[in-house]
Structures are given as C-alpha cells and as structure tokens.
Image (cartoon, rainbow, N blue to C red):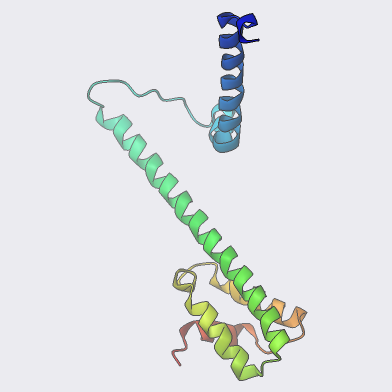
Length: 156
C-alpha cells in the first residue's frame, strides 16, 4: 500500500496540510494584525540582522507596551467575567439556603474579597450594577449600588 504513494505525492500532501494549518493559525490568532495590515493601518516591518537602529527599536517598544496593555485589559475582563460567574452562583446558592440579608451581605463580601484586582478596576461600578440587577432579578432586592460598593471596602 505504501509503495504506491510516491515521494512527490507525499510531499505535496504534507505541504498542502501545512499550508492549511498555518492559514488557520494565522486567521485564528492573528486576524486583527492581518486586518490592520490589509487595511493599510499598519506597515509590514521586517527585522534586519545586525544592530538595530534606534528608531525601529522605539517603534517596537511602543508596540510591545500596547500589546502588554491589551493583555492586561484582557486579564482584567477575564477576572471580571470570573467574578460575575461566581456572584451568579453565589446568589443562586443564597436563594437555596434562604439567607437573611446580613448573612447574604457577609457571603457577598467574602466573594468580593477574592477579587482584589477588580476592586481597583474601572469596571467596578459596572460590576456593582450587575450585582444589584442580578439580586433584583432573583427577587433578593437587598442592595442598592452604594451598599454593594461599600462591601468592597468593609473589613468586618
């Protein structure tokens, strides 16, 4: 069976599969860069061998800083999403246990303490609003946004 496949056919098949794989990886992970490159918003820069000149180095550093900022904001969004999932689960758990307002407050305070990065985030007011709306949606209606905001800093 393997003797019927020539090396030319084998190399052609492997080349096609590799091209498809790298095309998928490029589209999946670098679609934003590819779109910017095709739209003309970003120029293709090739790294040259030897000593880099100062201007391209500064450009590369500024691009790295923006990438780091994007990664930080992605981490922040992931942290907020994790907090939201945890709060929703906590509210459902509190409904099942039929906690009184003060017990629910303590429980929520413990959950919020697990996310200190969100405490200083610009997304904190949105998280507070979401907590209030989730409580109202589930019929708990125990807090307003100011009370939830106070739970972030309470140290009881």
